[in-house]
Amino acid sequence: MAPQLDAYFSKVDELQDHFIERLRKAVAIPSVSSEDDRRPEVVRMGKFLESELKALGAHVEARPLGPQPHKEYLELPPVIIARYGEDPKKKTILVYGHYDVQPAAKEDGWATEPFELTIDDKGRMFGRGSTDDKGPVLGWLNAIEAHQKASIDFPVNLLMCFEGMEEYGSEGLDDFINAEAKKFFKDTDAVCISDNYWLGTEKPCLTYGLRGCSYYSIEISGPGQDLHSGVFGGTAQEPMTDLVRVMGSLVDTNGKIQIDGIKELVAPLTEEEKSLYKDIAFTMDNLHESLGSKTTIFEDKESTLMARWRFPSLSLHGIEGAFSAPGAKTVIPAKVIGKFSIRTVPNMEIPEVNRLVEAHVNKVFKSLNSKNTCKVIEQHSGKWWVASPKHWNFTAAAKAVESVFKVQPDLTREGGSIPVTLTFEQATGKNVLLLPMGSSTDAAHSINEKLDKRNYIEGIKLLGSYLAHVAEEPMNES
Ligand SMILES: C[C@H](N)C(=O)N[C@@H](Cc1c[nH]cn1)C(=O)O
Ligand SMILES: [Zn+2]
Ligand SMILES: [Zn+2]
Image 1 (cartoon, rainbow, N blue to C red):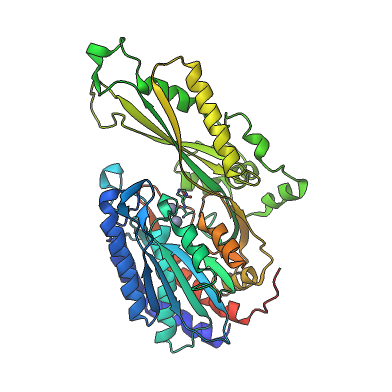
Image 2 (cartoon, protein in one colour):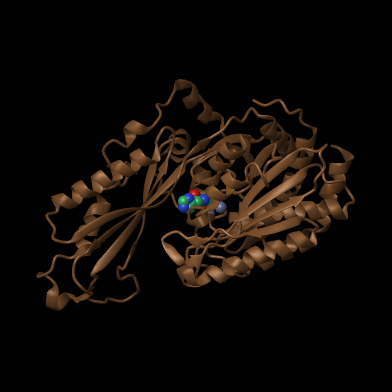
């Protein structure tokens, strides 16, 4: 190992308590992008990053994105962009992350307060955003600080782009990235995103593919107001009765999407691709552990990985306007909005998926012969992404994994979505790599989200080591 990396790793170990305190401060800011009344907290989180970056000597700008589409009364949180280093002899790496989080409330079933970082005796650091994506975002800041405190020259110029709306479909960011591609991001040689997870708990991976996500709502309304079911039950057509039928027609218990035409859009599976899955370090036990049960659709790892990475899935998320509190309220909701999303894969095109979804919902609703009104709305869509893992950007990351974890990483795709990945690739024309920090058991988006202390600290080493290897890799584009 290069002596400089050795010194860097030691400094990261020495500073670990300080880095955990930084994460504690970040988790304490409930920057939930999907809740209107939490918007000031999202802005506060952006300001926190801005001041931490300034303290590290980075050039920082908070760029406004204007009003939120469909919610013009709300300003989008700013994108925090920063530059650390401006040496023309060094490569320039653009890193992206998000500082917003999914909603969380103790009543949802959290064992600890979601916005208080709580560390247990196994070194698990619980808190909303710990793994998605505050830990990885702070990882870049921590890497800068460890270089400074170890008096090691920073190996690259670092451009940073941290957004506050990722969990709400990255509203406004595509236009921003396209507008800045030839300005703030013009020197970019490669892009790195740390916002996904290892497949298991022991072996790191490099990720070269993501599914897209198209999110819809179905709005069914009828009565002028909520009704007493004793007075109106049996006399009024009920929106909820229609909605559960329409939602129930979208997907079956084994995850099979029931919308005509969807499966025909999926790229056929080749024999060569099929053979890739058997060598991936992943077991059904890994899945059972992260799932918290054995209620899987498939019994084998190959089918499971394919279902997660290269086939579409449709998930039902919830019903707005429905009675959901404990107890037994005898209400007939007047208007209900069902939410679902489709994870998309090559070669599914967004407009075609939208057309098939709309046709299906309208057909099923019509078959109910209901006098209620039904509308399907596309909330947001992001396209799938698949890149070449043979690029020097991936080679540098693989060497970094070996230097920190002493293993060769698996090359994986991911079931989740990071809509701007493709935007960065297209806008900069450069290779994008996903370099995860967290593990499969981190429960991102769920209750009891956590990041293991080991993943955080070794992850900071990984990010710094990646930058050191990037500096040394010849730039043969492939
Ligand atoms: C993988 C990433 N950490 C993530 O959680 N992304 C979200 C992004 C999203 C939200 N709506 C649509 N896409 C996800 O995959 O759900
Ligand atoms: Zn994320
Ligand atoms: Zn997320």
